[in-house]
Image (cartoon, rainbow, N blue to C red; front, side):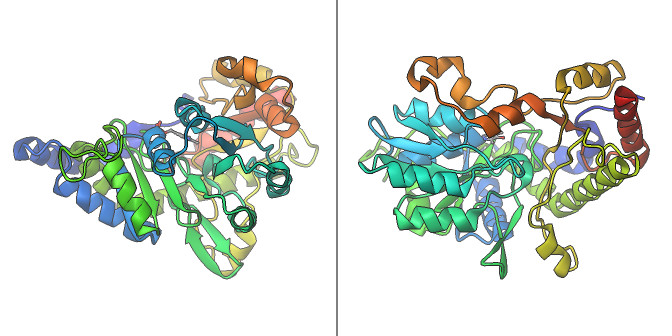
Amino acid sequence: MKIPLLDLKAQLGPLRDEIVTAVTAVVDSTTYIQGPEVIALEEEVAAYCGAKAAVGVSSGTDALLVSLMALGIGSGDKVLTTPYSFFATMGVVLRLGAEPVFCDIDPVSYNIDPDKMAAILADDTKKEIKAIIPVHLYGQCADMGAIMKIADRYSVPVIEDAAQAIGAEYPEDNKEWKKSGTLGLCGCFSFFPSKNLGGIGDGGMVVSNDIAFAEKVRMLRNHGAKPKYYHAEIGGNFRLDPIQATVLRIKLKHLESWHAGRRENADYYTELFSTNQLLKNGKVKTPVAIYKKQALEQKDVCNYHIYNQYVIEVEQRDALIEHLRKQDIGCEIYYPLCLHEQECLKDNMGNVSMPNAEKAAKNTIALPIYPELTREMQAYVVKQIETFFA
Ligand SMILES: *Cc1c(COP(=O)(O)O)cnc(C)c1O
């Protein structure tokens, strides 16, 4: 049985006519930059997240970049972040001439460990750390309550890299569920096609409850012009296409049901791994939904994890990947090399050691989790993993 890691055709099928009609309308409108579709999407995403403002941008990467620019981050500044993320999280820091400071991850959630973060900030006596970028990896929020408490103590702004986590929820003060991107100063989403809300090309968004900050991002996304042709600040062309916006508006209506489908699939995988003993004998470590307990008390209606990826840990990871690919099962490593180990900054990082991140990079493997995946397909994936360990 051929099982891809992600099947965008399956998602497109039932939406295709609506999407083609909407894209055709944008083509016929001749409004190809900004315009009503972009504004409508911004309003809809802001409402969905419970954020006061949203600004459409050209990608998740540019959402991060323009957010750092709005904070005035540049040469001589340091930005605290995780060593275990997609390159963009660190790339934007380097592009601005700033320096990343890495904080190792919690080995269960794969997200920044707040205790380690507190120690790093306590050591930053010269106050060089000017921003913190936690990443909500795989679709589960970092421990934002703890992170914000520490960040507030040192008055350092927090930019959430929520590229994989639009709609993921976090129980603030164990009372109120809040959506990712609304817990820090701002949140950055990516509409890359493989994200839970993906366009038909690149796109991204910055959400914030700080109106002044959002307005600055809005200005910088269009070369810093205010008014047109007058530039008190240097921005860039970080605009979102109306064609992407119109497609994303259609898909946004289905996002909650897709999240639920992914969560059901995740539960079923875990059930299968429990039945076949691979969990019990420690061969496979399944992902832990940290905030699920609170969610269950509220009848499981919360997006405690949106499973952009379902990532297991195994010891013979590379051999397992080879085995699964031979059986036509799509799988991927997110990510095989930590950020502090990337060649582009080899010289600067010296002997930085991030044991938890390095272990994750060595042992993790993402399995197909998309909502259209059938139980039969999941059983086949798990069966093949069983065969590998037999
Ligand atoms: C996808 C992703 C990005 C970048 O988003 P693009 O839209 O591809 O630029 C940034 N951070 C993380 C964690 C991502 O997964």
